[in-house]
Length: 143
Image 1: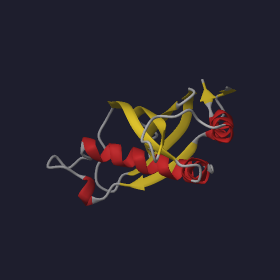
Image 2: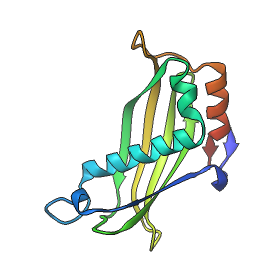
Image 3: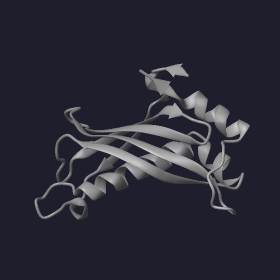
């Protein structure tokens, strides 16, 4: 397990659009889940994890999300989503994600997302293979 290294934290930028807003003119809580998911997919793609999963017959399934809404974001706000692996288990992993307003650095959302690897044919959870486990541990960060 690596100590916390900011160079291992992935950054995704999203601009809030009108269709992200609810009747109160701030980002709807369900949209934050979409923002977090988009950031995780970018993170997995840019770190080479996607082929390590799918080329070996694995899928990924979210099994738990703990999310804390700290403040609202509104139209045209630029948001930065930081993502990193905070815990690796034999067949599941936790990704910590923080959404901040880019202009102020204020935290909007903090979340921990747990996912499992599953065999795409049997649809059952499986342990990470050696290559995937090694890559996940390379990306793992702890404070």
